[in-house]
Amino acid sequence: MKISSLDHKARTSVVDGMEKFFRNQRGLLMVSLEMIKMDRREMVRLLVALGEACGHTLRRVYLWGAFAHDQNPFLEDDTPDRYRGLGAFKMRMTSRCQYLNVWSKLTSLTVLALNYGYLSDQRGNVLLVLASVLNGRLATLQLLCLEDEIPNKYGGHAIPDRAWKAVLESCPGLQVHLVVDSMPEHSMVRAFISPSIPVHQFALFSGIQLEQKRPWDMDVTFRVLEKWYSDTLEVVLVHLYRNNEFFDRVLVKLLTALPRLTCLELIGIIRDVDNVEKMCEILSRESLKLEKLRVCVQDGSNEGLKQKIENIQSLYMEKLLNKGVEIDLTTYKL
Image (cartoon, rainbow, N blue to C red; front, side, top):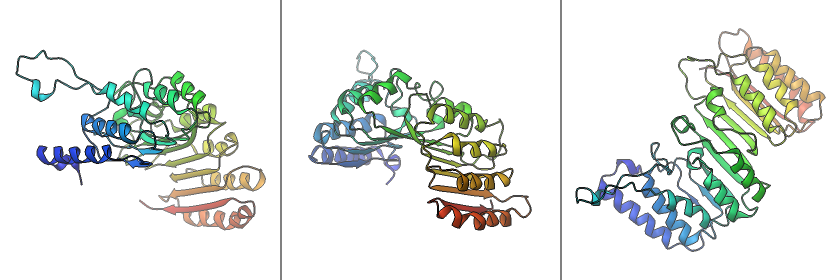
């Protein structure tokens, strides 16, 4: 069901029903409101109900896409309709305080998935609230980064690095999984990251870019990952569509530059297939933690590319399996 397709009466009925249902829950362990895309006042109502009824038991909360794309929970609302035109002073109403208070109720959280924009007020208050109540319990934070939520541009503020430091002091075992969707340019990615984020998984999906109007500078992105997260980064997934930049050698370097890396996956164009073989050669020679290497190469005008990839797979597969490394080297056509 798409709530946005409902008329006002039906929509109100659905939201009222969900709120009533949540208020009757007492031992709920997990809730997912992903991609429901609600108005922020509606979603905050549901979160308040959850927090008051079962905030002490909820362990896993999934909120990717819970708010409509233009409904950042930190934005202000106009005066409610029922007060308009009645001579009432036109004040600015906000659900911000209620939204922040919800997080103080969720005292058992271990896994939280939400958009970066749902955390991004000027001080990083949601993180600070979580840091004050969780005392080491939060283990995984899955952050979705979208173009229409770029900090200091379309969607709120960048989360201050000091807020990340505060939550790490409270939850030193926290692992952040950063998912960057449809934003291949380094200038966009850079707006979401800072040195103190404990990034353990990094996934970048370029989306369908029919034209590459500006350089993506992805080599810079990978150098920043290496500089800031070499002590934490374990998984790197990169899915690109029609990339035309030469960054194969940067990927080769990542194998040894990220000592905790266990999984590296690339889908896109490889400019020099010899770099795929170099990665396999490094894995066969070095004692690394990598357990899985997946490279799916876009097969364009490079004659014989498919055969070359198959040859590398055949040459190294058994050798690397004996070292506990799974490789999956393939090609695909657009």
